[in-house]
Length: 201
Ligand code: SF4
Image (cartoon, rainbow, N blue to C red):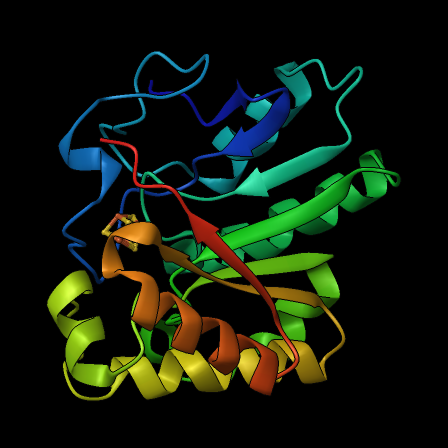
């Protein structure tokens, strides 16, 4: 079975699904099969909650202060398992900080508002803003909800801010100085933190 829990930059990372409604032009999944100490992040079959809990129980969390849920896939595509795993971690390791890295499309994926439940389960949420317009966003993410994904992602981000989670919007530096500046303003306007990540080719 592929790695469900692995170490990356001295943090614990969770890979609970390979499903994703996007096909981002810079997605790392198109370049390598694994990152950090993982060997393979492509699941043959989607992990069940039992698989995930077993992986948590088998992992040595000593010295780890943060657990991050992110790719190789969009974590909110495995919504029930995501929330249940966060709750399990919260009980087992109360001091562990829980962060969700997401494309912010959970409400579209799950057909309902999800920020409240997510922010109850997680301490922080990092959302890929990617661009400053809906058109630009669709071009970069090649998502399955063209024309409505960008607005849904921004609404989700605002909801997370309102729910009190530490919320961050991120872009990759390839979009250029001008868009980075505007993206920072968008983040600030909704009360979110901002991160410009360096493109890692
Ligand atoms: S949202 Fe994340 S996992 Fe999905 S295609 Fe984009 S970069 Fe890859």
